[in-house]
Length: 280
Image (cartoon, rainbow, N blue to C red; front, top):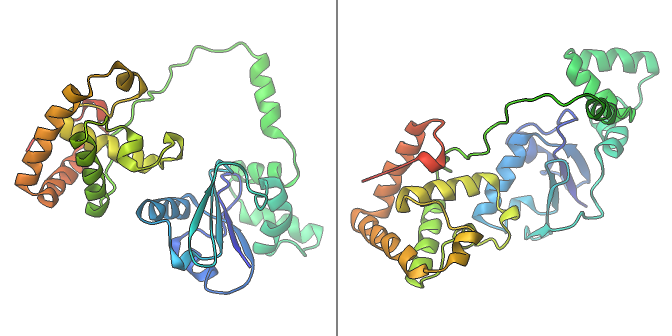
C-alpha cells in the first residue's frame, strides 16, 4: 500500500494544502493524487531537516513533472532516486485514469462530462491545458513547431542572477554554520556541496541553495566557491578571513546574529545575492 503524489503543472491538484495531505495519508489504502506546488515545497523543505519522517511512511512523491523523486518506506525512511522509478506515471496516463476518479468524472455520460468539465474550468487556458493532457492533443508540440518555423525575434533575456532568500529557521542556519566552521577550520573550500552536505548540486533544493548562498555572502562577502575557484587553489587565503568572521559571530552569539541577518534579508526585498552585504 502506497500513497502516490505527483506534481504536474498541467493538471488541477487534488491535494492542494498540507491539511489535504494529512487527510489523505490518514487511511491505510492506496491513493494517488496530483499535489500543488505548496505541498511539494513542504515535502522538500521537510527533507532538508530529516530523511526519516514517520508521518510520511508509505508515501511516494514525484516533483516538477518527474524531475525529482522520493519514496518513504514503511518506517518513514526516505530514498531519493537518480533515475525514474517504475511507479511514476506520466501526466497523460494519470489524467486518463486516477485523476478522473479523484474528481468524480470517470463514470459520467458524455454530455454530463462536458458540462461538468466546463464548469470546473471557467478559465479557457486551464481548460485547454487539461484537454491537451486528457486527449493527447500535443498542443505544445504544435506550438513549438510553429515557433521553430517562425523567424526568431530579438527578446530581452531574463536575469539568471539569484535573489536573496532565507528559510526562516535558526536550526537550518545553525547546521549551515557548523558545516562552514568545520570546513574553514580544516582549510577546505566551503562549496555548496559542503555547506548543504549534499554531494550533487543538482539535488540541492532550490530554496536551500538560495538560502545557503545568501548566508555565506553575508558572512564572507563572497559567493560560495565554484569549481573554477576551487581549481585555482590557495584555500588557506580563502578560508582565513571567513574563520575570523566566524569567531566574531560566535562572540556576538550565533542565534542573535541569525535573527539580525534574517531581518536584513526580509528587509532586502528583491535584492540579488551578489549585491547583498550585511554587517554587524
